[in-house]
Length: 358
Image 1 (cartoon, rainbow, N blue to C red):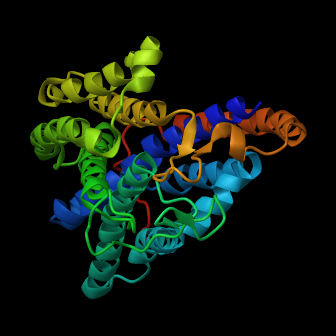
Image 2: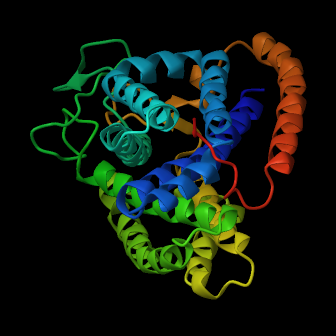
Image 3: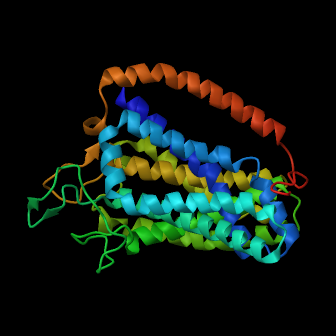
């Protein structure tokens, strides 16, 4: 039963990354490339009817984590307390940046909320990439030092960074050179993803420029992905052991690199949704490959004293998991109906939506 909920959790996070990922990317595009009011309105229109619904997937994933894997929920929410609070504030500023900008038509007011929206989007992309890096790297469960565990086996706490800025240090930090690398990859990937969404949903004057930006950024994305795979051996001596044990998992990296190489043709696509498709493939393949690489671990332990948190040792009681399955399928049907209606109502180009105008 716990494996069913593990799949559900991963799928929810994957949907969140794809859907809210283009919101973050659109915010980054808004920050760096939208130079006039027309471009800014086009970007806001492209994501306006969708962004708040997209964020619900993060809340739903948190609910599933709390329900199905309560020990992991307790451990991670205490250990990652500082960055989680920062993410919460960034989500708030990103939302009010979109909602408050159009309340007063004054250049200074609009500039403040434009920056709030753009900077929050950029930092959220960075922090979520860093978060993935922390899961891959693992944490010092039990706060072990000199072979002695000073806290409960599932407990840990991390500062924002450590003095060594090293992922292999006993006293780890949230941000080190490895997690920061994954954070930069996330920023580039979501910038590309957001650009593709804007191209798909608008006729903005930015679109031609965005295709060129996607093409150029894709070279950096490919280089950083390859670099991260090469240096992964520093963090995990056998990073591909699951792929060797279960050869069918190689389809996930294939999906990842199909997405990257497909994006090199973004300037020649006949249909504008192709770019969004390929960036979605990269995000889905990359996240799935990362999850598959540490399976069945959910949060690896970097010491040999306390075991990693796995699907089996953090799951709730089977009875509760089985009861929850009934309600899950009811909720799934309702969510699918909502999404189908939403994307049918707002299909096509969004230039004339006029989101946030008062």
